[in-house]
Length: 186
Image 1: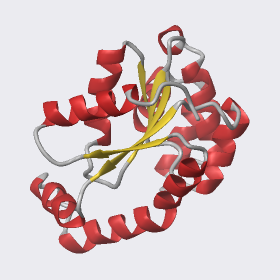
Image 2: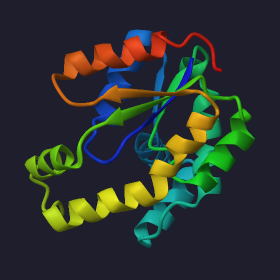
Image 3: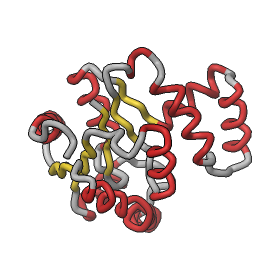
Image 4: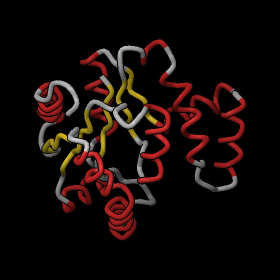
């Protein structure tokens, strides 16, 4: 099973992706984790990523896709994977389609959380760079750049919406039920 988790900052994508991957016995593929692993391993891609990040720039899509291609070729991803953190833009969807094919994902799980709850969660983390203004800016960027992916994947018939508010265990069960409720990509 190949899944993509989408949701705004603070929706719990990483937490749920990790929990669901463990339950389904598939790989959790986080782009942030991939970057850190490549840099730590000192690979050629890792060296490129490290230089880009040290310069304060975003890692180009082609580098991210190259890392993703390597990551999903690893044995733990043979049974499937959950993508967490990529794609985030329509251009990245095109790159992912080039890698996996347009029918390469079985489901796209969208974690729905009201904005006021997202702001509350993000401010509760206590990070110095998380002010209400910066949080709301990040949510606006999500709406502008990433939310359009939901429409695109909805047209492909593979989106399931999950209420992302409540107990972490309950949300995990909702995600699993939503994924199981749609046998086969439509």
